[in-house]
Amino acid sequence: MVKIAVFASGSGSNFQSIMDSDIDATVELLVCDKPGAYVEKRAEKHRVDVFSFTAKDYSSKALFEQEILKELQRRDIELLVLAGYMRLVGPTLLREFQGRIINIHPSLLPAFPGLDAIGQAFEANVKVSGVTIHFVDDGMDTGPIIAQEPVRIEETDTKEDVQRKIQAVEHILYPKTIQNVISQWQRSVN
Ligand code: GRF
Picture 1 (cartoon, rainbow, N blue to C red):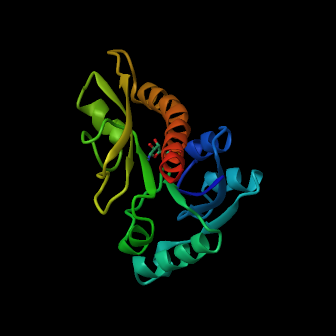
Picture 2: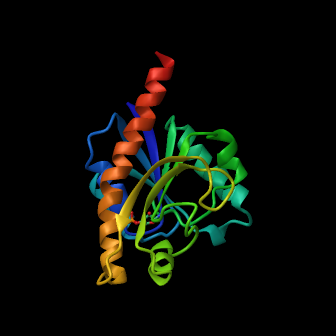
Picture 3: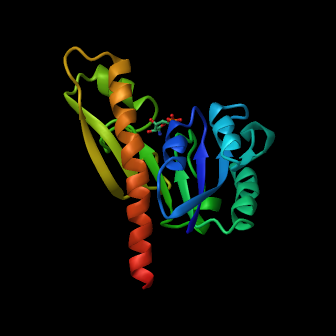
């Protein structure tokens, strides 16, 4: 079983879909930068350890990432899964987890990176948006793409409709892609 840490800032529906999936991994830790976020309740329910922090309490990103790193290392975490973590990962974690950090983004990257990707797509009146899962590098929603799935936007769709459709795809695509990444590692060591 591969040991995973999920990083999230909000409701955690993707965290939930990972917990509910049948993958060759165990979620050992939730890292949350918004104390009180609903994702923490989900973690507690599943008896997953939570490391919760407020960035403002630290004078630099390096300092809070060092704390996170300690939590990851003492649990032998192998893969970092960002699921609605609203922060750029800094050099402290990137260096240690090179090629072992993945993120999910609610658009077909490189279209609509950054905040409110669903709103951006809706405003742009595109007919197709979707979901991207990619390895994380030091950019904003950049890094090699692992999986993508399109979602059609109909004329009559509201922004909420688009959000619902995109999240439904996310909840299937993320666990499946995590499993594919793990299977690929397992094949490469055997
Ligand atoms: C998802 O749409 C994900 O693509 C984006 O943030 C959202 C998180 O949603 N990065 P949730 O907290 O998992 O419900």
